[in-house]
Length: 135
Image (cartoon, rainbow, N blue to C red; front, side, top):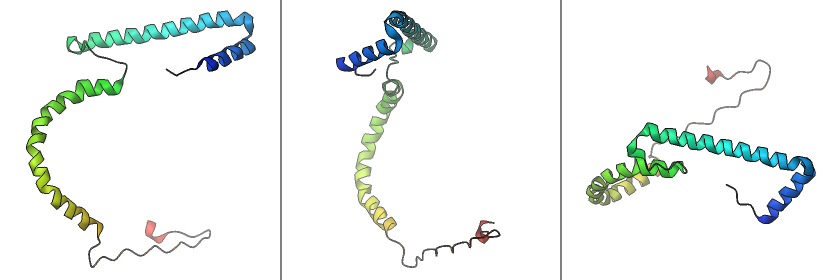
């Protein structure tokens, strides 16, 4: 959640007293606490149902950070399988580095006979003007 400083909390409390008044503030705080508790129970119930449906292999599933969950359960096993392939391809990658640099340099320079297309002529303005190339 957010990082609140004590001065921000004090300002919010003063604003709440001014807006809602000291009579309604305790009831509003109770209702807010009930809503937050209800939402927390819904989230915990959803997590429990998800763990139950996924089965025992996902018993250590952490649902707080989606990026960490995807990395841990989906990407890490694949990375472990790819490590031997990467180590086998490392010498080949170093052999192909000069060729890649050559290709990059060649793609940046235009060929000798290259002529860019001329800019299109502007369309005349008026009620019956149309672009002849658009059809």
